[in-house]
Length: 133
Image (cartoon, rainbow, N blue to C red; front, top):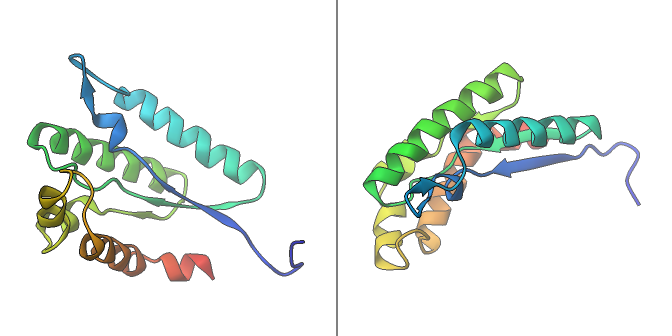
């Protein structure tokens, strides 16, 4: 049962998989990825949920990272236009000490605990706790 004074929200974190190239094509064209994010924001708000968007992290492959960075910038613009908090993660994770190194040591895309701790710190500094209150 919901508490009468509670508020609810949804955190959306997407985009890296959309930028993956398969069979010579990007899996999800940027315009469609933007439309999908728009629809998710609108659907959440339609049922009374606040929305917080976390930008996509680096994928670890130079060509894909260019696409991720471009899509992240478009997501940031979309979020700003809809007055939705957005946390950019790409540059800080790419340039930070853990994400890229740990991902490269593993499956190439997913870091170990240090990388996820770095991501959590970026999200917290990006206003998540204020939003959650």
